[in-house]
Length: 215
Image (cartoon, rainbow, N blue to C red; front, side, top):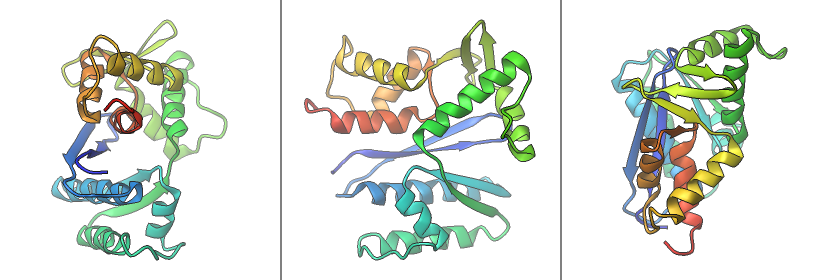
């Protein structure tokens, strides 16, 4: 793969989201992009003097390698592993926790925020620290009937999509009247302009474009 982009999102405890993206000008594998995105997020967190950073990733391989639970044996990944660990060590005043989080976990967060806004109750398995995070996350959302909306920075209400709805809107925007031959970041921007939102929108759009045979 050559010329596609990577993305990361910094999310504050107050429910603010700061998406980051860049284009890679070299051949890379999926795991290489995970390391690149992780390093990009850590560097941005250091610049913003973040004191506590939770890093979530989809790749079990990359997360376990960063934890030190698995050895990094792929010659292509060894420099990336060293680079990310060096970035983490630069932020000596910042506590970094790296965790694995599946794509479905992102949608689950929205469902939990929706339930909290509707009933002001938590999932029975929610720990106290996650309850605080959920309360802060919910501040950035608005519930109208059964429909959950996210408040954007300019106070526009973005309708939150579940997993199936996200797939359908990506197909509609990418292959419909908007035309194909666009990159993942442009696709995500079009969907955002159409007032739709889900937590892994940019990453999902990049993957959707990669799978498109017409692009």
